[in-house]
View 1 (cartoon, rainbow, N blue to C red):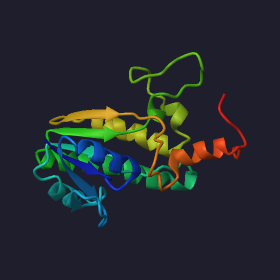
View 2: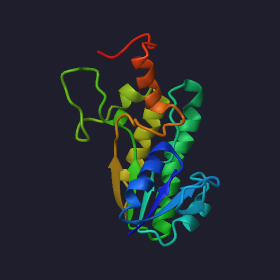
View 3: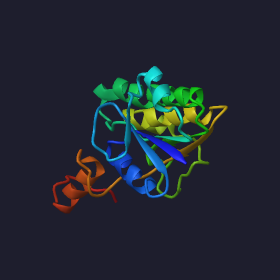
View 4: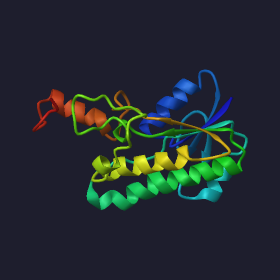
Length: 190
């Protein structure tokens, strides 16, 4: 199977390339030149025409591209990257004849609740009222709705929790864990 990973140079994308590359032919789809030891195709998820060309000949596209921010001033950027980006990836995948799209989302779209006695999952009511104040989660939730309503292509949506581990160069969730272990957090969850 030939699998393209959009955002292959990010933390999650690099790990996907390594793991999937053991059994499949993988293609890294990135905005800029990077050395990933696999076939590289340049495309930006905000440029649909380049995405379609990058998806040519692929069986599966995994959209692992994105940024994380819950700062109010980043709301428009989160919407562009996650919602508009997902829409562009979906349209380009369909136009290129890709049979499956795997959309990487967040546990913050399904596993949040105002109560502690309920374990939320993908069958629970959508938490838009709760996540609307967080630009990242809101954008991820809206992007999920967009791709899951798609016709003409198989779509799978995955909702990982914290992404932790070696190679987290941007700091991400690993940074929060490190701060906790170093007693540098002012508060910790119950």
